[in-house]
Length: 187
Image (cartoon, rainbow, N blue to C red):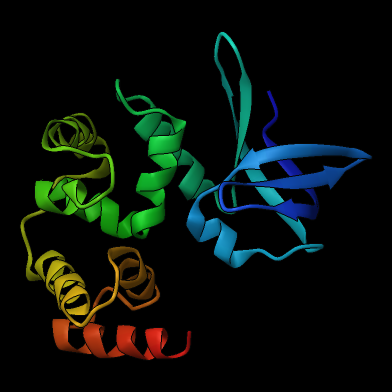
């Protein structure tokens, strides 16, 4: 199995990158968050997951091990494939996703494109003991409130989520919105 790859980014699309190392180009599926962090011709090191199917062998890359670990937890759930797992990883930080699962916040998970109520319930049921059960707190509700506030100001859900990912989780709702607006103002 290929555990990691270090090389230069020679090609980049909205779904994958090509990493060249040792004269070989490896196609790695990556999350949208990872795509934003890397640049063409940059030397990068990825933790990898090789997904073998009957008709294909796909390689997925992650900048940190915690992201790979959570990706593999998601793959252990029936009905969640690699592309869905990457979509889930792309919507929020791992800490926020774990908090949503730990607090059994189905509404947060169903805001992900392609994740319905049954799949969100399955994710919570299968992962809540692995990520730690948490009491419902205002921080998770603050995240949802900030997301809804940004959407009401005309930003798309993906723009709002990307901006909120860059905001410290411990801020109250109003400060989260202000910080996210500053992030969105610089685009």
